[in-house]
Structures are given as C-alpha cells and as structure tokens.
Amino acid sequence: MATSYKCPNCSANLIFDADQQLMACKFCGTKLSPDDVLSPDVYLNSEAMKEEADKDAQIDAAHAKSSSGTLPDEKETIEAPTEQFFSEEDTVQYVCGSCGAAVLTDQNTSATFCAFCGSPAIIPERLTATRKPNLVIPFKYGRENAIDSFFKWCKAGRFTPVDFVKNENIEKITGLYVPFWLYNIVVDMDYEATGKKVSSSTSGNKTTTTSKYYQVRRKRKVCWKMIPYDGAEDIDDKQMELIEPYDYKAIKDFDMKYLAGFFADRYDVPSDAFTMKVKARVATYVEQIFKKSVSSYTTVSATKNRSQYYQPDVTYALLPVWILNYNYLGKRYTFVMNGQTGKVAGEPPISRLKLLLLGLAILPAAAIVFKLLVGGLILGGFF
Image (cartoon, rainbow, N blue to C red; front, side, top):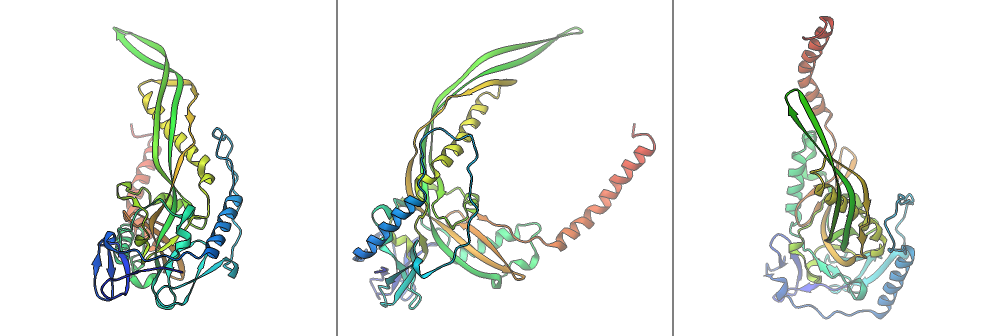
C-alpha cells in the first residue's frame, strides 16, 4: 500500500516544504519539523516485495560487469540506445492510503502522487532492504523559487530571446529525487620521473646555460569522498554532472518524510556498473596532483605511474533535482536544476535578432581594422 504522512490537527496530507524545511499541511496551515512527525505504520506486501526482489536480480544480471583489475587503456564501447515504450508489463499497482484508489507507477518510481485525490504516495516496498537509500539531501528550493531561479539564469544569457522567459512557456516542472551512487575511493599515488631544470647566467658577452637532472618520486595516499554517479538509466548523465556539486554538509540519514510532495526514482543501474568510470575519473585527479607537484621543473620526462587504486566503497543516496520542460515556438527544451544549490543546466535557444545586432555593432570596428590591414599591405607594412 502506498503511504503518506497525515497532519495531527486535521488529518490532511503533509508535504515537505523545501523553502521552509518543514512538513506543511496545505489544508489547515500546520507546520512541523520532520523530526516531530510520527511515521505511519507501513504495511509491506509480501508479494510486492518478492516482485521487487526479482527485479533487483534482473537489474544485477543485465548490468553485471567486473569492477576489479587495473584501469583499461581502451575506450569503453557504448551501444546506441534503443527506443523504449511504456507498457503494462512495466507498471506496478499500489493502493492509495488516502482514498483507496489504485496508484499505477512504473517499475522504478518510489514516490509519486495519487491521480484521483492528489495525495503524496510513497511506495515503501521500493525503499526497504537493499533498495533503501542510506542518505538523502532534502530539496532546498521549492517550486516557485525553482522557477524564479531558472528565469534569472535565462535572463543572464546574453543571446537568449527576450520573449523566452514567460510563465506560460513552462510545460511541466517536476521535483525529482534522483538515485545516486556516492563513491569513496583511496589511491596509493606513486609516480617516478626525471625532472630537468635549466638555468642561465650572463657574464659580459657570454651566456652560460646549465641543465640539471633529478630523479623525482611522488608517493602519497590520497582519497576522495562521495563522487556522484546517477543510478537511473533514463536520466541524462551529462546534465547531472553539469549541476554538480552538491553540498554534502547538508546530507542526512534517509527518511521517507523528505519525499512527501515530490517524485522519487530508485536505481536501475547497479553500483558496480560505474566502478571503472570512478577509477578513470580519479586517475585524472591523481595525474593533476602529480603535475602540480613537479611544476617547478622545466621539463619532466620518463614518467612511470605505479599508483594503486583500491576498490571504492559505495553509498546509495537520493539527491534533489528540478526537471523543467519548456515549450518555445513549438519546440521543447529540457532544463535541470540542482534542488539544493539552484545551479541550472540546459541549452536555451539563441536569438537571431541579438546576433544580428551584435554583428551590426562590431561591423564598423571590423571595417576599420580591415582598412588598416589593407593599407599597411599596399604601403609595404606599418613600419
């Protein structure tokens, strides 16, 4: 059964108010700290739990890959995605705890709304056992604040069309908790190289250049915490990277109360699917550390990298994302916003009029430069 949180004063639904960081009742105006809200008795359907466990096994089998070994030299081959359609086989039916209606969800939805009474509906079977997130960062931007921040971001775009920023252009805005894997990884950094320092001195008309060679060794233990990768296959990974970072100082132990009033997905890509990507990403960080440490040398050559990468520890977390679908001149644009920091990512349209005006503005200056260049060539140069 889908569950929701009830107001202690009027029994209406409570939702998490991101702007005030409180559980709020829209019916009577009651506001409570999430810590003061009693959790309802959750009934876990044994048949539904078995179906969820079977799906877990299918996910692990579909994405199984080894996460051990050294970093690969070759590029990973990625197959082109095939078009997918929503089918009845992908839906799971739950009962709304408020009105008793059937709540249909796809196989990865953990929190949604009842289509009949509008109550927040949290699917507990998808948030228990191995499916239970360890951590959550609550939304800090509510819906209206998210829209305002998006419009400010659009207006800051130098070539964004003037009439692009309009409320009526918003097709849909969704607050979604996206499943993320957070990786902690330790590396024994071990680099060896030959460093060369070149110096010169002048005495009278004579300049002497001296080259000195050094055996360079850089060895230390380095670690990174909470490197994020989203575990939802249908979420754009590039967009998720663009709205990083999250402020992990605000991360909390998982509590279903923060999901009330928002959508939430569960992972459908297991954590070991990203192990090699994490190691490859960290390898670039290690290389940057080494290069910075030898920047005092004129040149560095014969570099040998013997660094050892340990198997990363992984934590399952839900992180807040606003997804905004925007319709402008018959074309849909999708933007994402970090629900905690307000950082926006997406590609707004380019105003041809603004580009034309810019071209007209720089045309006189370009004509002057061209005239000077041509004049200089005809006269045999400027000097």
